[in-house]
Image (cartoon, rainbow, N blue to C red; front, side, top):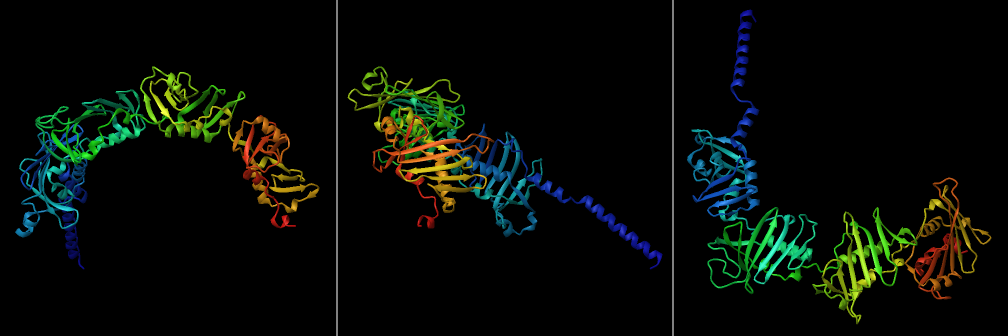
Length: 615
């Protein structure tokens, strides 16, 4: 190749490179195209305050934002369905351009199939008088989840552009305007409701609470007492689930005893006033006729008169006693730090909760309490219903025995300054039992069946644990049954091995390690079935124990710790009989416990190997 030819080729290469560079500078990059496509669909949602929609039947449909609430302002004026509005805003926010189109790319038939000549809706997104975006939505596109659309430019004189959009707007905008009405008469979060009033010709009932799911309801009018959480929230749920089945323009708001619209024959009406989040809403509901499936209602925050479900509305008519708390008390056991039980027959029972454990004060010291009994105590208070609301006045307590209560329960809750109190009384003929809150005037009749769960005897609250030890601390177990030779089992915690003697015989080879470990574990968790008040009889029986078990312990965690000997004695509750229940006593402790025959037999099972016991 000669020099001249080489120069021509170099010139052509340079021209091609220059052309490519120039073309790249003139054509938009992929990122620029994406940004341009996004700007076509973008609008400032923070500024958006109303949405105008011209539907296929040329009727206007307008959504307007008023505060935090969207309303339908045309073709009627009412609160919009928030879920449907949220879907619309989501679809508008997530519209994505799939492809740009030009009219000349379609023949007449194909263009007609896009639906852009007679669109499903013409949509304008507005901020006051400012137009944020404007587009028409046509038929669904060929690709699933797409629609044809044309969009006007925001600037003056900009040409309308056609697109294929990835959006579900077509199906949403095709729905009739009436479907955009909120079909819940009153839509509020239940946990935000703090007060409800029921006002009728018979009077007013008012319930209130602090805001929050766990706040307690109180009946404020006509009485001031605890409210029934279940029954009040059942009514609240009915209020918040009143379904609209029809609506028409209300020309005159009804008052109590008047027809819902325009006068006419008197009707039973109920005004329901609901307070939530600092706002107040009032519903006026006509009492459903017998057998009716619907009734009418007005709402202070909405213009139409509504037809609503009779089933939900009917339960709003109630008496004050229906909303009273019918349980003995409402107590959160975890929040109680002190508990006292006072009676005329026994010294005061004093309990306290520390680190989630209950302790009982006896003989001048704190010891573990019976956790199961404490749990049963609170369970009884929270789950037992009163038999009847007897009196709303405490002017006369004597007929109910409450002037001198035979039992008083009191407790102090964490972060509370004053104690709560329940007084128990009995009628003079001893046929009726009554309950009164310490500072409340109300008297309730109760069943005597609850009283065994509030024993006034401190011994009943004593923890059932008799002996607790770790097998690492165990040195020796000696079992003596009647007059038979005692069996002595020695344990080496280091090697985890057992050795033993039965009388003068070495029985180490006969010991079944698993059975011996089971015996040690059962003794280390020994619990009483109950504690005995028949102390004289029990001590006399235990002078001749049927079974005696001695346990030697030495702390493995403390070098040179002293050896401790514990002596367990068991005797039948009837001398010379194998009774179902036995007395038991540990060392010389002042309390005697009961243990079942089956539990005692568990300590007496042979610890020898099966073949050894058969020899």
